[in-house]
Image (cartoon, rainbow, N blue to C red):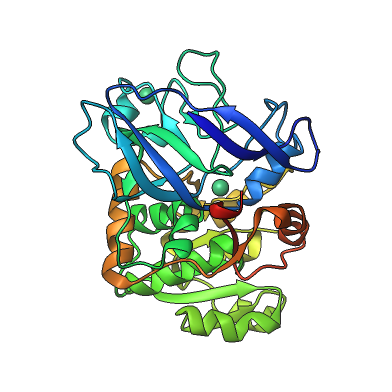
Length: 346
Ligand SMILES: [Zn+2]
Ligand SMILES: [Zn+2]
């Protein structure tokens, strides 16, 4: 299948138009026209090889929504004309204990990344969503409600599930107090989900100017993280705090805010190691944990939850010729709250 995309041909390169072919449909494959593709900060990290060697040419994009155009003969999950979404991985081993439990994101044999990876054959590169069409196994795609604004659903596939999964896993619900550190692409989804799940939600930010947005998005409280009086007054009061900030920040002040059995969950990956005094953890049975996206069943659960609660991401829709500028603005945190490429401009 002939495909038009945008690719980086070498590390750190500006993205330029790139023609390539998608595979012919296998029995369980679904083809779709991409409608919108979100720009995730990890796209930029991988283009720039911040996390190690990448595979080039690279077509980034793992927040992909579109409309089904063709299905393989054994497909039962999708029909032509339906909305479909693809997230951060497109396959996994399907046989390890994690895959069998629906936690494909933790596949013991490695998930297949939506781009910058190879298919299970170990040889065919995967190309992401900055493209006009896509082919995916039906088991690694989700249904997207017709009722949701389409452009705002794309970032749910990475930014959304990255927050939804830990909120569900650690039991955010009515009567619980949840903190979200950082109000960017990830954090703003955390606020929406935490609020919709019924938890009392607090945003921690170093930017006082974000208070208005935090409250508008559903937070009950806003705390400027440098305000020590305010931070001290909140000690021992949170059930769950999710750190969405990838920059190196001191976690100690946040650990102190946790109740007995409270958890501080990391979803960003700062480059440096951090030190933590065990005396903050042991006496209150506190946890420090991590969480990485969600499994396919949970991704569909989140999409259905979004339809029930009319939740989408706040986005700025751009044309393909703006990708470079959008990358610079993403690095500068100058976006409310996610760039989404209109695939009709590719
Ligand atoms: Zn992402
Ligand atoms: Zn597996």
